Length: 123
Length: 137
Image (cartoon, rainbow over all chains, first blue to last red; front, side):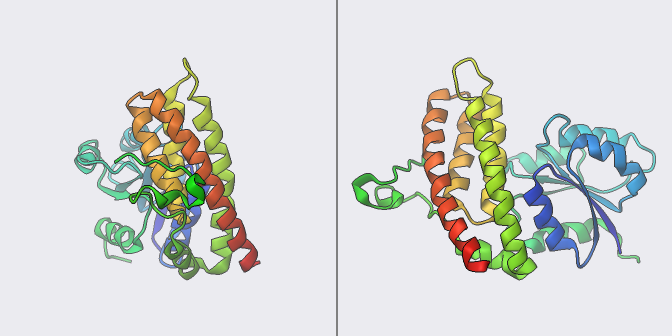
């Protein structure tokens, strides 16, 4: 089963994403940017779902750190955010995120298709 | 769009005078949670929302007074916006979204007014969600 690292501070959002994905993916949860930094290298995820608006170290900071880790530098990172303003998508893609999914996740197929787009179809 | 919820005015529901005020609850959100994870997920999501809502209102209040950091209010509103949407608390979510916008713009007067509307909507949603939790128990 492919492994998704979910970095999200709201416990209800973590629970919801877990409920959506758990039949298809192994989901590892990180409740803050600091937790992610402590555990992501060891977790060796196939993809990272990263909330932008984390307290303290935000999603963009985590992304910068992640890109500096040899084992994670090419790992796909999908931004998860409740900002949904015009131009946001371009802004996050320009910041180095591979894709962008908006919260609330009202249609889980949008999340699944973003994951499929970035996970290679092997194994 | 400026939402304005005046619950209890003319004894009617909050949306009576403003056609663009969303309903308190969207039942479809709960149906969706049920489909994803049964009654257990519905109960867990409602519990987490209610816990988070109290905390976030505190955070919103912390940034409201003159001289306080309105960024706290913005952060609280931002978090509440998606938590509320997850359980279908539409009016809370819409007011939180608007509070996020005005806080970001530094409009403390609008933020104060929206904070009070939000408190009313939070209570309306809490009553509905408590009733739903009891039905599922």
